[in-house]
Image (cartoon, rainbow, N blue to C red):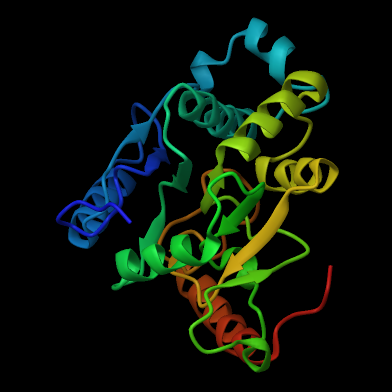
Length: 247
């Protein structure tokens, strides 16, 4: 597998981080520091901030009932990244949101996952993180294996897709338009499109708005960060052992 001196396979992977043009400077600093420390390229995607969402783009890609400004903006950023990826000749697209933490050995394990994945034309998505605190229970894990089949995703903070997936998703959005927050929308479209869902075990990414580092920018209840951190860690370690109830 081709890789640069940092160990990250730049020659294979189109990488983007969903972000905004102004605001959330703490997240920008965090991402730059975190990615540089791990040797992962930092490319921020800042199109489709809330003020940039025109009536025309709403009519084209957003269903009438979906009116949450931050949710609409984030959804368009993901779709924009998929479209930009398809303008390249790279086989893989790696998408992050701007609150992620990377595992210390991210590059080594990421390369192992790509090698295990195999065919770059495989119609599959890999969830790299532990969004929702979802895990394959420990008794199902196998030594040396990184990828495990799943019935749903793990949010949209970190995932890898192939060209067939990006093509299918973009076509689905053009035909149906986005009607809900992007993580739930992706689960629906991937299920309809027959896209294979895989979880990376154990996860090599963690979401800062879940682990108590950042407050959420999308909405919902902003619990005190210490409470969020305690709750997340309790769920994290119990679910790593036992898994979670099927959805």
